Amino acid sequence: MIESTIGSRWFRRYPVSQGPATRRLVCLPHAGGAAGTFHGWAEHLGAGVELLAARYPGRQERIAEECLTSMEDLADAVTAALLPLLDLPLHLFGHSMGATLGYEVALRLEREHGVSPAGLYVSSRKAPHRVTPNPAHLGGDREVLDELRSLGGTEMRVLDDPDLFELLMPAIRADFRIVGTYPARPVRRLGCPVSGYVGDRDTGITPADMAAWADAAPGPFDLRVFPGGHFYLTEHREALVRDLAARIA
Image 1 (cartoon, helix red, strand yellow):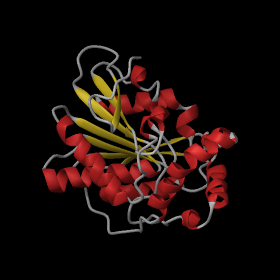
Image 2 (cartoon, rainbow, N blue to C red):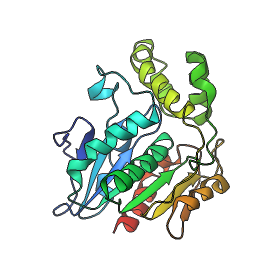
Image 3 (cartoon, rainbow, N blue to C red):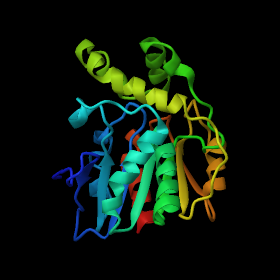
C-alpha cells in the first residue's frame, strides 16, 4: 500500500483499495501511539474509503517537533488540519486517548465550522462525563511505564531498547499529561452517529463504562465487545475494520 502525507504534516494517507475516494476515515492513535498503528487497515475498508492516520508531533516523521501537552491544543490543531479535507464525508475513529480527541474534534467541527462528521467511532475510553484522569504523568518515567505495562501495549517491547526509550519517552510523557489533565465534563450531544468498541478483558474500562457514550449520541448508540484487553484491536484488526467499513458504507 502506497502512503503519502497528502500535503499535511498531520496525516499519513493510505489510498483507497478500489476506485476513487468517496469517503474518508480519520484514525486517531492512543497515548504513546503513532500513525503506524493503522498500517494495513485500508485494505479491509472496501471500495471508496480513504484512510488518514493522524501523526501527532514528537514522533516518527515529526520527531523533531515539540509535543503538545493539552487536549484542547491537540484538538484545535487536528481540527484545523481537517478543514481542507471536508470535500468528502468524514468519519472519525479514535482509540483510547484518540476517542476523546475524536469527540473534541467532532464538537469543534460542528460548533465552530458548521460541519458534522458522518460518524464517530470510539474505542476503549470512558465518555467525557465519566473519565477519571490518570495521575501517572505526575510521577516519573517509572509511573508511566507501569501504566503502559498494565495496558499491555506493544510499546513496551520497543522501550526495552535504551536508545529508543530516550527517543520515545518525551512523546509518551506528553500524551499521558494530555490524558491526565482532561477532567470529566458535562457531555454535549453530537449531531453524528456514535458507535463504540471495547475489549471484554480491558482492566481499565468495562462495556458498561463504554455504554455511557450513548449520552453523546443523537440516536441509538451501538457497542461491539471484542475478546481481549485494552489493545484488542491488534489481535482482531480485520474484524474491527470490517465492522467499521460496514458502518461507513
